[in-house]
Every structure is written in structure tokens, then in C-alpha cells.
Length: 366
Image (cartoon, rainbow, N blue to C red; front, top):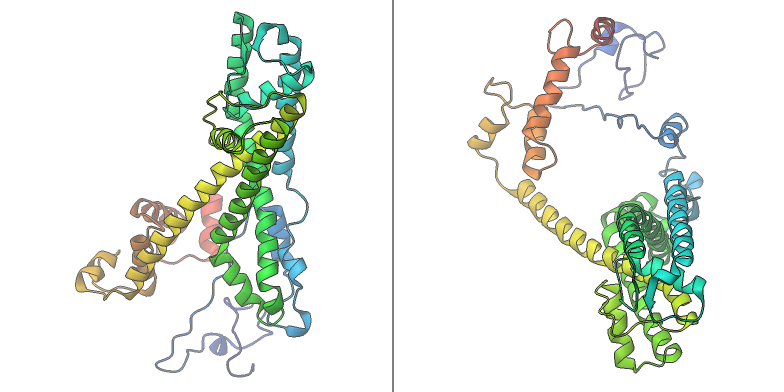
């Protein structure tokens, strides 16, 4: 006989060590409800599946607590990150090569280096900046520019977004280490939960820092390297990072255009991410306000009627939770209906519950 309070197996014979059936079906004391904590649904990610088979050391054990470096380390770039990086490189190489070969079909200011001008035109095309200081002058050049403009929006936009997300995640990890490393060993689970709740703030801080660095570096290069007045340099930077590209101020020298090939790519994406995270933070605040309202408001008879899915004039725990999730916008009535249809298909004996025998019959029928 197991000690009182020991967790009983879910099914008879499931690792109970030969316990009697009456002990397995033993009810909790009167007035006490015992809920089993459901495990997370299996993940389609092979790495996550491996982690389920070999779970990490429990955080509650102080002697075996994982270090902040192990918990927060992002690891190597993911395959998708490498793939979009290769796509970006292929686009830039192809665009630079094509515009180098057809540079005679371009008009405007030349810097003196055919390769740098081709690279510069490729970058300002794919980032939709379009200064206008170097433009196609023939039908062939216009057709090529049109093709690379659409290609840049479709392929390079995704590549830059993935690259910037990876960079922001790295910055987020550094911010967390700087703020929470001192207390991580004491309360690791609490600190990780705090990091998850403030995740958008960390990304916004990182994107803001990168944006400030981009604006400052671009202004200094245009001021010192291109000979612009500080106001004109800042004006050109703002017109560039917002992809306006008026064209009255731009990079003219070979060194300036070589710098612009990298700077324009990074700065335009950083600006887009910064405002994306601002919108995401606003959406999160509205969602949290809605959650507080749903959790604190008084439940009425109208709520019970709406939560009663099976029409038995009683609301169980599952029905109540589903109703609250619907109020929070986490799940819709259509999704619940689809889940119920799947449940009915799997319930072979139509007794309102699922068992391994139901699954076996359903799989055999399918």
C-alpha cells in the first residue's frame, strides 16, 4: 500500500506496482477536489520532443539548478535563420552582378566604382528607399529594376525580418542577464516567468537601442564623410530609415555608398521592428486589461446559461474554463465545435468519455 497522498496511476496496471483496484479507485476525502495536472500536448518540434523524453533538471532543486547561461543561451542559429541568410546573400549577389553588367543602362551620379554603385543600387532597391540619384535609363534597365523590386519585397523582406528577430533575441537575452542575473540562482522559475511577461519590453528596448545607434552612425558618416551639414545629415538619415528616400540628399562617395549598403539594410528593418513592437506592446496591454476584467467581474446567471454547452442546466469546470477562454478571445465557438466533432468521432462506444479502446476502434475504422 502506497503512503497517503501518493499519486495513483491513471489506469489500472499503469506502473502501480500491483496495488489493489480499490486503492487505485480510492476517492479523496469529502470536500476535497483533486485535479490532475495535464501534461503539455506533444510538440512537432524534434528538439522539443527530445526534451520531453529527457526532461531538464528540475528548477526546484537548488543543488541542480541550471545556470543562467544554460537556460538563456540561444544556441546556434536555427536552420530557418541560415536559410533566409542564404536567400539574402543570393539576392544581393545576383542583384549586384546584374546591375554591374547593365550599369551602362543607368543614369545619375556615379561614385567611381562600378561594383559599389551596383551594390548600392541593389540595396536601395530591395529596401524600397529609392533615392533617385541612380536610376534606370533604358527599357532593359527598367525591366530589371522592376523584377528586383518585387523580388526584394517578397524574398529579402522575409530574410531581413528573420535576421533582425535573431539579433533582437540576442539583445533581449543580454538585457535579461544584466537585470536578473544576480537573483537567478535564488528564484530561477520566478525570474524566467518575469522574463516571459516582459518579453515585449525587452525586444522594444533592444530595437530602440539599435535604432538610436543606426541614426547616430548614419548622421556621423553623412556629416563627416559626405560633407553634409548636421541638419542635412539627420534629415537624410530620417528620410532613409523611414524609406521615404526624397533623393535631394544621399550618399555620393564610394566609401559612403559601401557603408550605405550595410547601414540602409539594417536601419530600415530596425525601424520597422521598433514600431512593430510598439504596436505589440499596446495590444498586450489591452489583452491584459481584458483579462483582468474577465477574472474580476462577478459571474451572473446569464454567464452560466452561456457556459452550459450540453444544456443540462449545470456548468462543470471544463465548461466554465472554456467560457472564460472565449471571453478572453483565446478560443472561438467554431473551434470548440470542431473539437467536439473530433471527440464524437473518437468516442466509439458513445459513452461520453475516451479510452484506449475507443482510440483503437477509431484507428481501425479509419
